[in-house]
Image (cartoon, rainbow, N blue to C red; front, top):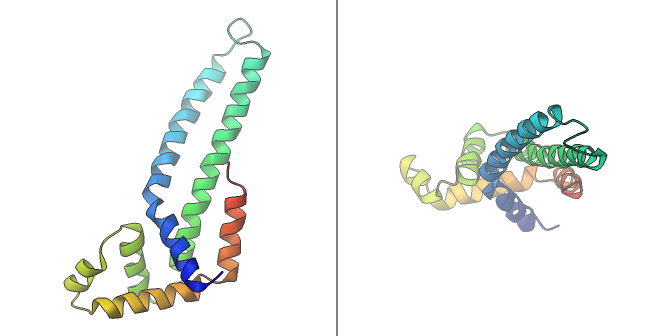
Length: 143
């Protein structure tokens, strides 16, 4: 995979970072409701197929939850592997928090072009084969 494509894929994943966090919260609520439902299940209300489907639903929800947790961890690990604290913060602000390069460069009185080049250079260095293989493994286990 070309370096530019790696950065593009990183950008796509970080674009949904907050959605992943929100979805984990939704799944947690669904799992809590399911737990209550399973605790109250008895042979009169739910036949054996119903109980099995509750366990299947719980399993699917847990798998989906783990998928989003793994994606979030991957993003955090990629950013943490950047050895420059300034660039690490810049990547977090521009990709995860989705702040514009223009506003950041204006606020910190630095060249927008310089910020863009440094950010890309550092990302290319940490989005190595190992990081991309890890992402691929995560995506293969998608629910």
